[in-house]
Length: 507
Image (cartoon, rainbow, N blue to C red; front, top):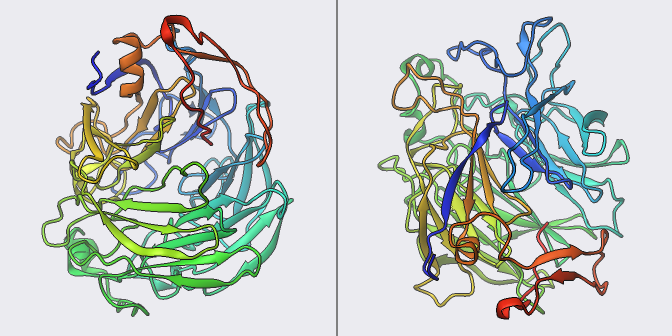
């Protein structure tokens, strides 16, 4: 393909076994996936997942491990994995040793305790043992929390920050479910709890899955929606559900059409506010259910500044997806450099999209819809018009040329989809349990996997997804810490003029 390649998509000959609502890449290049139970909640009365059905309990396992192997190899079948406490709607993070820590979850119970209420559970998936282990409990029940690992050295290797999450599943009319707290959890226990976190107080129901990023300034950025109930949200609800909403909406401490962000200092454990992100045209928030893809942009060489970019969402007046993008930069001392800056709009409007950092320093946007919002039981979603076309953002390009339209996927990926970067350089996409958005008679559950080969692969291989034309890393340290000198051995340097132009570390 030419330098102007749009990349290409391939549908892989494998089933994920479970809907890839949540996906995590393991150090052995296998993929851990988990979903929600099929058919437990009206009106989504579908039969249990036949791929993982356990006759003894009349329900199905909700997690699986997938081994795709090399690009040229036939993938192995997904292997169901038992997890004792439901991890659906949980927060997850990869730890220093490569294991996946999952905190919180959903409140379902099946099989007389075979899989139990996971909202207060903490469990770890060990890639070597290929199994879940229950390792403790949270201070509060948490549904839709965000979990992030903390810097090594100051904190124990097992320490994580667990932020927000409602006390129970999403019910906008019940502010008692708000949980404006966060906790430091590690070494099998709750170490500290912070109540009334500024960005989470008074912001229900838009304070679930807050955006949380650890910055080089030894701070954590916290970002959540702040505008409370609004007519565009109610207009999406069914008449029956609408008639049941009798609670007055809580009053936000911030003005309408604002987002509130703050910096949490990891030395003093105090917060200070960041400027609000003004989005007058957009629906109540940039968080759930008006999910805007967000990303901590790649760090520039020799710079400790960190930039967080938020794109998309839902337009209040039309319910169409938005193209708006904004970013804020914090330098290495924790100083905000310019408040929120309006970036070029995305070429394709998106809500519920996924942003994936690529090894060449660009950001790929995939999945999502061009109309509606997240939420809804399986098969009864609130979105349509899938955003098939991938787009690429280059932070270092001149303003006016930072976005590039790429090839379009063929499989819709609406609510409950995911995407990740594979070690072979491809981007894998999974999930969606709203596949009957255009025809209620169809099954809503998607088990297919699509792989996207970005332009950097397409240009090298001329359409061949195998690794024959690429430089190959043959040896690298298994452990590297900040400030270490690294030796990376590469095969193929000098052949056909190939050279190492840049080395990128992707976590």
